[in-house]
Image (cartoon, rainbow, N blue to C red):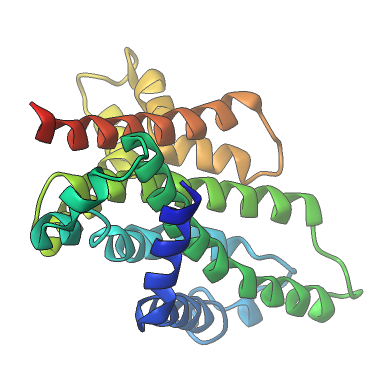
Length: 243
């Protein structure tokens, strides 16, 4: 698995993909937090990074499928997936190695945003007047959200040889699992019956819960379970070639 991890990570940073992804992510967040008046921190009367954690899932919705779309689609298109399969390594190890490499890129994109926390903390009155526990919980929730989106993107890439199709499918599945259940729960037929259950099936509910700074094991289990589900589905998709 380690060889696959380093191979994928090197492929991401030996080209412009990794650097472009990090630059675009930080640029969009920077414009949102400091320039756009509706979200600008400078227009708020208290020190908070809530705007970052509100807009980041929307950026991830497009950015992570763009990262993961090549993971298996490119291998399938060029035929190198067959060479990869002949290595003395299990299919799940291949999937896990690719998943961890892409997730590491997401972590690298998040790391520079710690500077935003420091800036807001310094600008607070008095300095340091910011809820560190809530910020830490929000960062954990955002990382776990990135893990789920990465697993979904890897799965989407395993279903096709076309990277554009993998990108669009990844966006669709990420949207459904993040906002879809919440939208369905508000339909007339579900209000008062299954609306609470449907909301808890969606990522948005658990992301909002963990972003409040309260670490609930149910939220952690949800994120880990959904990530594991899509990784196993990716493994199942890979094994189709043996049938």
